[in-house]
Image (cartoon, rainbow, N blue to C red):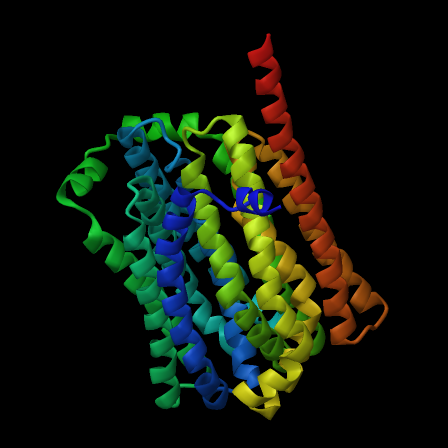
Length: 432
C-alpha cells in the first residue's frame, strides 16, 4: 500500500518546479491575507462590491487579451518559435486593449448603471491599461516557464501580490474610498510587468526584439487553434468564475456583492492561485513526455491536489462564519456563510485546474471550449432560476456552486479518458 501511495506522488522535477512558484505565491498571498482584516475596516461592503465588479471585468478582459497565444510558448519546438509567440501575444494584447477602449466608450455608462454602481463608469477607462499590463505579464511569465526560470516567476508573484495589497492599504489610509482599491489593484500588475522586463537577460531581449513581422505572422497562423478554441474557452471559463459578482450586484445589490467578493477573495488566495501555478508547471512538464508518462503525471497531480484541497477546504466548510467574524469583523460574518456555499465549487476547481492544459497538449481544444460553454450555461441557468423563482442570495449561490461543480467533474472525467486513451493507443502500437 505504501508503494502504491508513493507512486501517486508527482515526480521530483514537477515538485521542485512547483515549489519554486508556490513559495513566491504563498509569500505574496501571506501579505494579502495579513492586510485583508485592515482592508475590511478601511472599506465598506458596498465599496468592496464596486471594486469587485471592476476586478471581475479586468480578470475577464485581461486573461483573454493575448488570445491565449502564450499557451503555445512553453511547448514550442525551439526558442526562436517561442520568442515569436511571445511577441504575437504582446501584439494581440495591444489590439484587444484598443478594442476595449471602443467598447467602454459605447457601453461603459450602461454597464455601471446595470450593476447599480454609476460611480464606476469613470473608472472603467482603467480597464485597457489593466489588460495591457495583464497580457504583457502573462506572455513574459510563459517565456520564463519556457526558460525554466521558475524562481523568477516565484519572486514575481511575491512582488505582484505584495505591491497590490500594500497599495490598497495606503490608498485606504488616505481615505480614497472604493477607487483606492482599484488603483492599488493596478499597481500590482505594473510591478509584475516591470519585474519580468528587468529579469530578462541581454540575449533574451535581443531574441525577442529580433523577431521579424513575417515570423510573427507564420507562428500565429501555425498556432491558430489557440485563438480559435483556447481564447473563447478561456473567456467562457473566466466569465463563469467572475460574472457571478455582476449578477449578485444586479440581483441583490452591491453590498451583497461585496460580501460575495470577500469570500471569493479568500477562497481564491491560497487555493485557486496554487492550482493556477500548478497548471503552468504541468504545461511546462508536458513537453517531451510520451503518453504513458503524461498519464502518470495526470494521476499523480490529481491525487496531490485532492489531498491539498480537502486539507484547506474542510476547516472553511465547518467554521467559515465564525472565522470571518473574528478576522474581518462582525459585519463580514455573512461572507463566511457564502464561503461555505462555495466550498464544493472551489474544491473541484482546485483539483481540475492543474491538469486543465492537458487537452491542449493532445490538440483537443474544441473539447475544452465545449466544457467552458457548459460552465457558462450552468452559471446562467443558476442565476436565471434564482431570479425567476425569487430565491434569496444564499440559495442562488448554492445552486450556482453545485451546478458548476458538476461541469468541472465532467471536464475531469473527459481529461482522464483522453489521457488513458492516448496511453492505450501507444501501447497497442508498440505491440504491433
